[in-house]
Image (cartoon, rainbow, N blue to C red):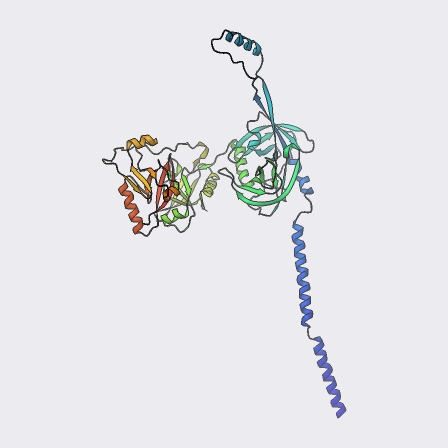
Length: 505
């Protein structure tokens, strides 16, 4: 019996030991998980490392036949040198005149040829080429040199757009030319790899690589939308392509930022989504045809937003509506444009871009905020290029002067009611109304906001202003309404802008 009990006890102990030995070891499990995590991290790092190209050779070989060097020549008149100075009435006057006439008789005017170098790229097999306008501007002769000793061809200008610095050329050839497609510049991200190709410093076909450093850069133009890159861009690269890794053109190399004229890693390429619209219009019409709304606008500053009771500074504030599409649709000065053709308007630059990309004659819906309420206007767009640069205010109206002209200092400004003498002095129309700024206190908020003598205040609180009494009423109304500032419409030389001045006592 005891033997049986001992055997049972022994078997129980063995089974218990077995259970202990088969129980998972926590340290072992932790080690395995750490190993697996390290393997996953290594695989991820390898995948990211593989996104960096090992070489640009395949891409360069693929697109090089479509990139061209551009040489231009311009005939420049050359003076024959200083002419002898002969006093009028001198006995030698006739002698020198006859001598110079014989010297130049039968001789053509002396000229010299000035040449410049740039880059470009072929966008169709039938010979359309894109470059910068400044590369070919004023040229009498344009010669296209193709990659790989494929010869040269003369090019003609199809059209140019100085606003975006884009030009479209054409060469005639019996054989189809290799070309490159445009890509979507909106899809490129900061940090993506790019490759620039062109003719830097006249050294011939050359490539450089880098990344997109920034997007949406604005230099000087109204329609600027530049991609910034650290790929080396130098003189002669102008007009050349900026490629993504799929061999698509996502920008046209246009400018560099440099203190010495050489590349310091800050180059700019006009975004392809801008270029394609321009090229399509140049190809079809030989010129650009941009939409035109016909308003003057300004951004909404914080103080202007407070004066108008707005919760944000989004939108474009209309300062003037001359004769044109917007006026025909019922738009008024003081309207805040919130959206255009279904796109929200963040600021004036955004509105200019959207309108410029719209079609001439197109009917668009424009949502404006007026007197605290939104309204939708239907505007038939005109053509910007044909718009008359006439900024003069309306036609002559009743110009009977006020029987008593007042002058008073308000909000840090000495103001005078309008008179015929002031209209003449400031070059205003006979019907011009408003209060004329005759002096500004140097330490006032008005001076800080840039108001100067000769400015004309035509509106206060988005209502017409013709007398000092009206201005005082608007100031009192703003204070009673708990407003910190009053919105004024100020005109200077015909150019209007809104200014908000504090009215707190």
